[in-house]
Image (cartoon, rainbow, N blue to C red; front, side, top):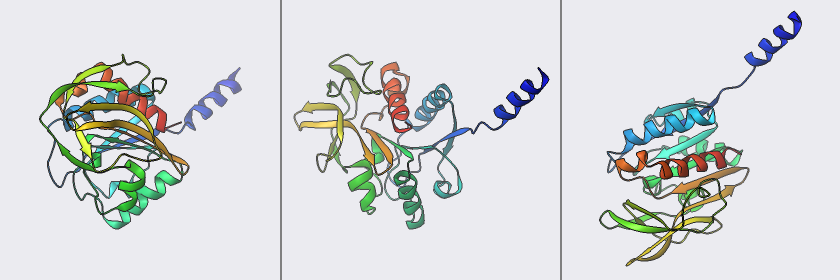
Amino acid sequence: MGKYVILFVLLAGCTTQKNLVVFSKTSGYRHDSIPNGIVALQKIGSELGYTVIPTETSSDIIDLEYDVMVFLSPTRDVLNEEEQEHLRNFVEAGGGFVGIHSATNCEYEFDWYIDTLVGAKFDFHRAIKPLDVQIVTTDHLSTSHLCNPWTRIDEWYSFDRTPEHVTVLLAIEDDDGWRPSSWCKDVEKGRSFYTGGGHTKESYSDPDFVQHIKGGIDWVSR
């Protein structure tokens, strides 16, 4: 009996801890919802078995080991060229990337980031308002819990393009037209998920929105 206990302890000791990094460096507008987002992501990470590491130090992109990278509302130029290349290599080799809200409002000069990883660039937004969100893909891990339509209040982005080669998850329509607001895609061996919501503090205490992000994280890690 003793040898089996010892074997179990040894195997347990070999279990690799999964890490999820929450990167929220800003060089432009700074969202006051970032602390709320970090708290929500820490809870999500715990539920999914991750150690969550919040950081605003861009060199951590290189220095840390992680399985999922979350860009939580970063703005403008936040990575140097070495950090950009490391992020690209991480995703293409099988890593998971999750972009929240202004993850489309950063790294404009990094073509791979805009064109391939997040798939579109922030263009403009109007005032915060309620909208009916259309559930375009109803069987995804990030959307299967949602009622259709999903009415919520947020700051709604318009983008410089309609993202290509993606699975559109959510869409909105208002006076600025119809456009996707959340989508996902495979990137070489890795995966990318983006959601345009998350401007407001209240978003991160909304169980449906938090579950939406949790599903996105779960999806990119599979």
